[in-house]
Length: 461
Image (cartoon, rainbow, N blue to C red; front, top):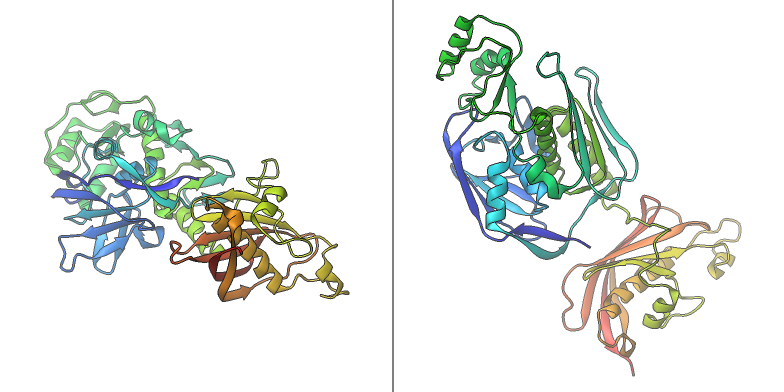
């Protein structure tokens, strides 16, 4: 099981802001487990902190802007893409302005600083959003769409299309996050010459220049008009006789715009708050549709509360029934764990196949067989006992006895033919021979019961 990660040491970057033109410094700090991404405006009184999650996105017109009350931070996506690509789960970001520095319009400076600062593993397990079925979000007005399909790893593809003779259709893909530095990070943001004047009039690109954005000249205009736009932005005039790119630096990749759109997708889905296991296919993506997808998934996660663990019937169990019987003293008809399919330092996943031959169905109830809730809790407790005993040097010398069960909830009937999947996680370290756990029982994708346990570990006589 992969562990959560954070930075080993802090690092800072300075530069001008794309929208404000201000000189900005942003600092990335290590953070504790389950902290997530948080951004702090240290230039404001009280140094307010914003959770970098999709619900806090307030604008996607040019870049991703998050905010809360009077606190706003924009142009965060290039930094967030680098954090996501390097699988950093927890980070406190401090900035002294209402936006991040644009730097050269890509993620490369962030990547280099992350590698220089180093990354450390934390003890908490990484919490993935695992795609179980097709998820699709569409924007009929723009023709944008994002499709996410089930897969056992993460990958992303971006297809862009513009009504332009210079930039019509391009495609980019990233099969492994480990390729982000060489394949995606250096891709710069881009803008069409025809978009510059409206952006300037709306105070959106005060810090834009030919060094931090690809400028696409795809419609003939008079040189005098180009000179006027250059003067409007307080930049040197550029002579241009042919359609193409106005930058003095060559493109890093032939499909650099498509790669930058893919970079933006990574930066925006980082606001989901969990890494994804699935394949993303984005058509004509932009910050608006990216954020719509992140919001859609976060709503689904809140509805589910906890995702059911993956149960792959083709994989051999971590512990079969024989190993289960070595750890637990229970026997028929009270042994209620068939196998263990996943075990970590602080969590465990077990399976119970509920058949019509269970003895309790003879009386509960003959005409409408339903598994008693107390037996669901008992099965959950047995799985938790395996987690505790499996970590001991001599598990046969001890037994677990449950001292307290709190916050029990039963949400749905369990009937013959159901497969119960139990996930239990330690709520704290084992202290004075006592373990505290939170447990969930699932049938399909739905939680059917849940409880919190306290168990005592006692030496066998």
